[in-house]
Image 1: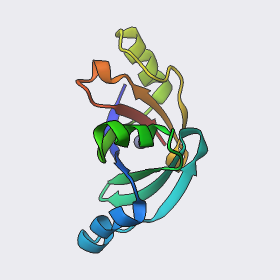
Image 2 (image 1 turned 60 degrees about the horizontal axis):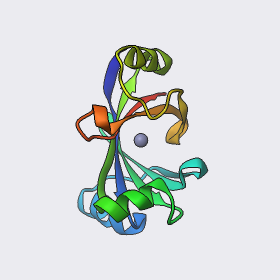
Image 3 (image 1 turned 90 degrees about the vertical axis):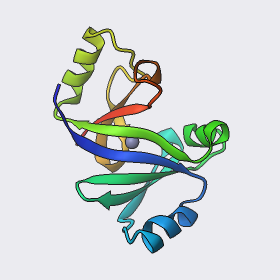
Length: 133
Ligand code: ZN
């Protein structure tokens, strides 16, 4: 498994327009596009920062994972995504090392990525995503 870089940081927000006041108006970053991932009940806003991205996550439904996250933990960093060169190989390797996975197989992620989440029980409480694109 080869981890290439921090792909993005996923930040749960209640309202994307509201959050953009910080990222665009104050920090001078640019929202380049948005995408709704129906399966995750989330609208994702992409904000490139150098070689990585901030992804703003706004729930499209009160029962979506991001809405539930905000309900229990409040707005803030929801997950960190590491880009790997080969996601199947990475998952095989993690499984072989006895690592707990949320996704055994890659699934569709925003930005045409293939992603999988690792279980926070094995990562010191951080929701870690691995991503290939
Ligand atoms: Zn992500």
